[in-house]
Length: 356
Image (cartoon, rainbow, N blue to C red; front, top):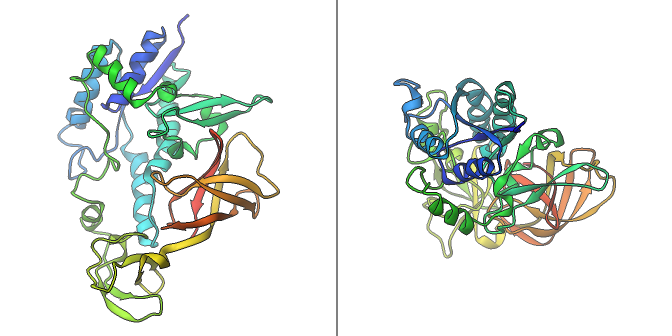
């Protein structure tokens, strides 16, 4: 009997090729397209959201591959788990990472449960990552073979139980190979390109999205340097992130960067790039994958944001889900609210949130 696998079909190229690969490997494949409630710029589900552009692309891809497509309304949990989290992070002066949370709580939470209810034993996505097994049988998360496209960072909150019900068909392929397969299978005209980073933000920027929320009120305040000297005024801390250079609007002998968001005093602290570097951070709410929480320091490579190159570091446990990370070289723009993910070789040991 064929094993049934559901594929989270976004309408993009990667998820479509994942579905096609599984169909080719003789799985019974079901396409799942989920609605966030933000398919239209207003965030309104009327007219019917299934007519949204992403759904049309997903439907075309499913027809070309020859699989059924189910539409799942996730608007309520998406609002609760992702949008509320996103807003709360900016309110607290942190920079959120909704994709990391969405993979854990929506895709491999709500969508996985829907997939199982439809008879699927696993949920596949188009992530460039892999799943391995340790000698004692524990599952572990691995990098994708395409180092330029590896997306294991975004999956660092998944538990071993979630990994046991996950499949990442693109983990052993490069993006170049995926494009070649899409062309050979004539899928390129049925799917759109890369998915946008913040799928629920349909305005020109996340700042506009927040500004359009009646409940989110911008609080102007002082722009200061590290000494506390007032240099100007900001229109709301939510419009800035640590490491930002453009949009500060303060002239100086050298470019200014955002150093710190002082949420308590509502101050934006800026300075030259040299003041942006730091050699350590605290990481909280760590999710360990396939290992027991360490009780002694570990030599790891730490990635402090998706596009950041992994850096040599020493992880010193401060309990089961908290650690101090000390870098061998200064790192720039260590940003509270972002995920810090720990690697040893190709394996992801776990990940948590950078503390303020």
